[in-house]
Amino acid sequence: MKVLLLHPEDSPCTGPWSRERWDLVIDLGFATPRTYEEWSRRLGARVLSILRFDYQTDGRRWVNCVLDRGRGRLLDRIGLDWWEIIAAAHYEDVHMLYLLDRVRNEIPSGGVELAGTRPQLFVRMLGQALECSVRYFPNANLGIGGRAMRVMRAARRLRLAQMVEIAFDKWDPCYSVRRHAAKHKRAKLREAAVLIPSAYSNVTRSALAYAAQLPHRRFLLATTRRSALLDGLPANVTTVPLAAYVTTPGSADAETAELTQAWHRLLLALQKEATEFREGASVGAWDHFAIHLARGLRLRDAWKHLIECEPIEGVLCGDDLNYYTRLPLMVAYRTGLNAIYCSHGALDGGFLFKMPEADYFLVKGQMERDYLQRSRPFEPARIIVGAPDRDNPTRERDLSAEALVFFSQPYEGDGGRTEMIYRELLPRLCSAATRSRKKVIVKLHPFESKREREALATSILAEDARQNVEFVGGQPPEAVMARAWCGITVDSSVAVECALMKIPFFMCGWLDFSGMGYLQQFAKFGVGRVLNIPEEIEQIPEMVAEYRPDPAALELLWQKANPAVLDEIMFRTRQVRLHTCAC
Image (cartoon, rainbow, N blue to C red; front, side, top):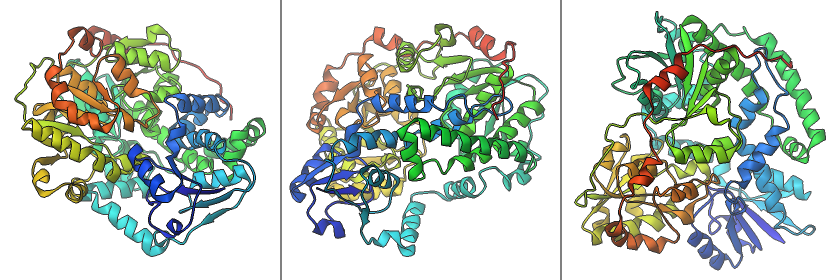
């Protein structure tokens, strides 16, 4: 049996591999079902996405079971669990082991010829699991010139400020350089404050909405990168860069050495206990761990220094999968400060595999509470239903609004084939909009390039259709919602925001590869309508005409927080938790 493993940047129909006959082609990314049907016809072989083996939330729950084996076995001197911190942040690598187990069952043992269009971790894993060598093809993209071209293409997608920020993230992850320029930028607060750590603007926006409900209290926004800053901060919010609190390099060297040795002992033990760890170690899946451990300890010390220098009463975190911003939440939880988590999205699938490291979890309504409790067991008293106030809490339905709004996403980041997705959606969206005398607005995610997406649309649409499409980038979703006749997305939290504004909303269920069960939860609580095939896009005008918002359903999505409760959980005093170091 000849099996080809297709890198997300390659096509099965072009390249040296296209001149051979294959029995099975597994795409390591994802595209539309129609794409795989077409490729299967052209190649005369089965072509499918690796994510076909990831059924709803099963894969993430499997990841949690694997992570459970290492939890509580790599604690630092204040009780932080570094296995939990690093392994959960890199859950995709563990998830590959889940997919490996499923893919292996598709391939009969013996007589397998395995090939990859280019080297990749999963390809190495499968070769090891099947005990066969992997053949790679000559590829121009693998040489120095090819890598340079890829870098240039990536650079064209970014603004200069984004490129500078990415360079600093890569070459100065612990702020060894940036700390010198930031050392005079400390807040030096004199009143008690709640710390808001943030790496992204959408996280900042979510947390500041809670801060605005307590105008008499002080909040300190500490950013790990410039893109987390917003214009027009509330008067009760002070902002500082984390770099201003970074301690002298080398201050954590002794503890780093101790924990690194403890990590190697733990990995050896885990390899003896479970096949998943042996298979991962054999292809270097855990090689990054020691690097992140050394980096993380320096970041921990920066956050500790900030908390010690400023009168911090608690931490309000909106992103605890990124360990840069999870660390201060965990430090607060372990050292007696108030630790509060509020997801910056509508739902947080991370709780399918990460541990809840906070005193309280703010959820915006019963839909989010239900999802959270089904993700893992929670003490009911730790979940507080309370959403921030909304600028536009009510909105009468506007049938004269000008646009069908497509909320796009950076699909490439998860291995998605954006061109295939756009080719399936854009022509149909234009057709549905034109029939209703509307235009199409493509609302871009902050990580998407407007120039690149416009060029893609030009290659897909005829000139007259292209004139009816507007790309909007660099603006929050609310900027286009006022213009929305209806909205559509593949999988985005903006579905809830549109529902609250009584905007008819549609979700492309046939493209749901998230593995988090978001669309099912949205549909369960009436957030929007799930479309099952692309042809249903043509029926959007009729479905919009039939749409009637359900006030009872909307109340389950968003229940405004009581400011007195927010004040109590953020600024009250609590007892210190004591943990034993396992170095």
